[in-house]
Amino acid sequence: MKLLPVISLLALTSATSALDNGLMRTPPMGWMSWERFRCNIDCENDPKNCISENLFRDMADRLAEDGWKEMGYDHVMIDDCWSSMLRDKDGRLQPDPQRFPGGIAKLARYLHDRGLKLGIYGDLGTHTCGGYPGTTLDKIDTDAQTFASWGVDFLKLDGCYSNEEEQQKGYPLMSKALNATGRPIGYSCSWPAYRGGLPPSVNYTLLGEICNLWRNYDDIQDSWDSVQDITDWFFDNQEILQPEAAPGRWNDPDMLIIGNFGLSVDQSRSQMALWAIMAAPLIMSNNLRTLSSEARAILQNGAAIAINQDPMGVQGRRLLQERSQIEVYWRPLSQSASALVFLSRRQDMPYRYHTSLAKLNYTAGSYEAYDVFTGKTLSGLSAATEFTVSINPSGVVMWYWVSFTLETPAWLYHSRLGCTRK
Image (cartoon, rainbow, N blue to C red):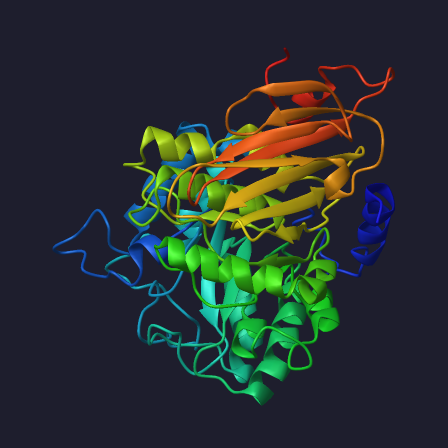
């Protein structure tokens, strides 16, 4: 197998039809409340961390003022537990009046004034997963119009308290209803996660025509075990899932938990690298007000973000699972570039892994590489050149590779990744 034909094949197989709303041609980026703040509605005793307009304004301020927006993190996503337990007299959803006294429309304006976008959560069922009013089939048009009138830019539609027949009808109907509002609203469907994530129960051709992204699998938890479980499921099923991703339609392995409590620094780099290889949405769920410098550096790594946001939009693949517990992942990128990730599943000590590009199916030529997390560069390599990477336990080494010719200036790949010219 040669690399360049594989790139062409993957680009071809990924050129599938997508929801025709012009949105999310690269994976969406931003911040979401659920994993870190869950359904904390105790604003009397925990006012800084409860699900309220103050929390989302705080996170919007951080995105706007701390360099996140410039890196591409431009969505603030409200998850479950935002609404009142009752619809209003006209049958419309309404926010909890104590926790969102200004209303959702005012919050949306606050974000828009800062160059950000607002996402909101709904559920295709009688109730949300947290027990709040859901969107039954007869309420789809009403709720879509309500979200649009508030200035919402993104809808995550969950699937609790619904059945297969309701999901089969409801998810396409919501897509149609959102488009009918005339407001561009990105659409995230949790449908596949409720049907096991795989064909024949899941029709990815249909999903790509109605949704911008979709949750395929279980919710992420704040642990390395959870990150590994999600990674394994996605790459164990890569022959099915990988061709379904393309600009405007993305597989979603769930939120980035970097900066919380469950991951070490090495494990945090691993999640960032794997999500970049998967062309996954980069939606953080953490406390941006108290984020460590190490977590911030990982999440704002320009090279990792550039790989994730590559305009070709091809999801990467796992190439190797070695007996040494080293795994190799690869993603083709635009302009004949590519990304490689070496992941250690070991728990003992750093491991020195020996390989060459030729062993990883790269064609003959001259190559240069940029180490995403150290900033070091390697130049003048041929495909046959043997090299060694030292990978920490549960850590990664991630490289961005370009094929170097006389027509390709040596500094070009740095500019592609937003790095300093060397």
